[in-house]
Length: 341
Ligand code: NAD
Ligand code: UDP
Image (spheres, rainbow, N blue to C red):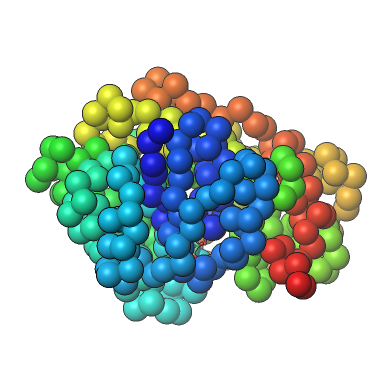
């Protein structure tokens, strides 16, 4: 049984990936400093899988602490989710973002190299395309200018990993560019748990639906899109999690450097999401039209063919399931992982 180091495994995408790794017969080991997550997510994953997940609370920048974990296991690969991810906050706190996301990855890579684990999957983002030259976006499109420190860390870390793989062909590096993950495990026991006022669309919608916020603000209805609101490629987090398992199998074939979009290929507008959420869940989501949000683009969706052809992976869930599962999680856990215990 192959053991996988999962950094940031207590977070939203990481916790869902633990379940899919377990299902596929891998043994995940988690390191996370819990800066944006709760140990409760790991407990819930243990309930769902019926298996204990080794967990180490540490900051990846702490090389000595990471080394202790590296020495304990013989890792086959690392899935590197850990990082700070709030776009707006990264503009306010650039040093924190550069330090956390860059330094933690450098320390991690040194440790992986030292312990001869040269297989890594990196959580990148569609944000590296900047304002895309065209949609749907293929991996061949050139990267664009990122307007915020968060996006820049993703783009720079991609370059770091590409240089590393160029210098030493023993590395297998898979860069996964996620589009817009939403949804939750169908059990409703794990899901996205944002701190404070949500920045992203779906957690805002579910908080309006549950009565925590009065109404959704839709950022602009004058874009050049079918209904004027922004278009994105929403992907169910369980599908995204399965994409990581598929990427691990590519490593078994010594893929070298590989870059994949993980999206559905379908673009939905903000109003499509609101209307689908209302229809599927039978709940009204009041909204108001607001000015455009700085830095937003009109439309961003993937061409997911490369992952389909090379990894045999494609998204299975549609927007209705995403809306159903997001609501199921929020309804069952109105305070997220803050159980009040
Ligand atoms: P998340 O915040 O839920 O998970 C990230 C985890 O990393 C958290 O549990 C946090 O505590 C941990 N972490 C942060 N810094 C750390 C450090 N220095 N040491 C140890 N642990 C640390 O985020 P997520 O939504 O699960 O995203 C996972 C990855 O995917 C991130 O790298 C994110 O940038 C990337 N990504 C996310 C999205 C999205 O919309 N959610 C889109 C594209 C890319
Ligand atoms: N959006 C919105 N109101 C919100 C949050 C987001 O209208 O409260 C819109 C946003 O302008 C974009 C889409 O929803 O068109 C997705 O935004 P999100 O922040 O979830 O993802 P990203 O901007 O990273 O694609």
